[in-house]
Length: 174
Image 1 (cartoon, rainbow, N blue to C red):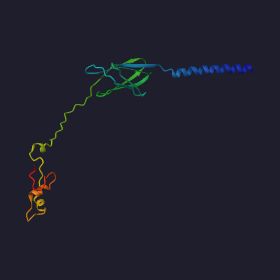
Image 2 (image 1 turned 45 degrees about the horizontal axis):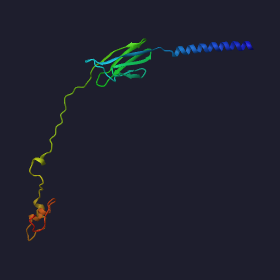
Image 3 (image 1 turned 180 degrees about the vertical axis):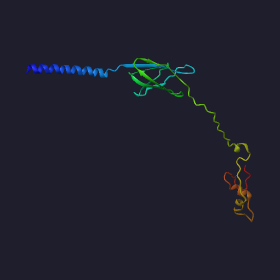
Image 4 (image 1 turned 90 degrees about the vertical axis):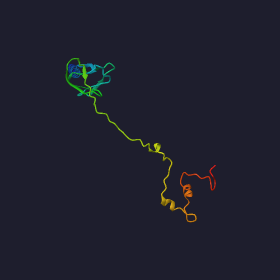
């Protein structure tokens, strides 16, 4: 019985050793780094904050203040994509089996259009003309007022208009 338990212990130990080695081989994928600079193609100026990502892994980064980027991923076949506002997007298929350095010049993609002019006329008629503060009065409006001794009093009619102040009856206004 003791011999049987000893054999089982050795078999279980060998089994665990094999299982550990297989697990390490499966999860021990070699990682590599993709790095480089993103620059403007026409001037060679560094592009700060350009977005770089690996499409298949949904993993990405952005450039630093010198236009440099670096991203570490497991080896394999990937699509490297670069985008930056105002520039054309860049895409490149890469086979990653060693450290890879790629400098990418981005082309300017600014949209050039003609100028847009919006014109309007400022309503300055009330400032330019001498008719400021005038009120028009229709003849029918004057005839509709009560008449004193058969005739309509025009001065009394004017005093009834809005904005006209009177000093009272018979006063000269001083």
